[in-house]
Amino acid sequence: MLSTVAMNFNTLLGLIDYEVRENVRLAFGILMVIAAIAIIVVIMMQKGTNDNVGVISGSSETYYGKNKERNKEGILKKITLGLFIFIMVCAIICFAVSIAD
Image: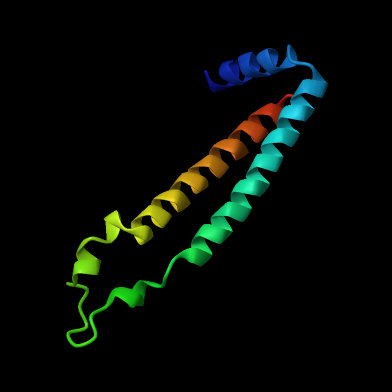
């Protein structure tokens, strides 16, 4: 079953010009480089995990700790996850396009 799917996929990619596949691979490669740089910048903007620990009690039961998902840190974590997923999808597409070579 899996080999039949692979054969159909290769047949489908065989219909696409080699030049077009190379351009698609190049475009997704450039997008992955840009996303990788963006993910590095976003990670560098995040604070460490010990920054929200309470000074006296040592717990994170502060207003900041409870509402972490609503502020800058939560947004940066969501952006990081989104960029990671984007890079993975681009890598899968590049792999799928390059199979037919």
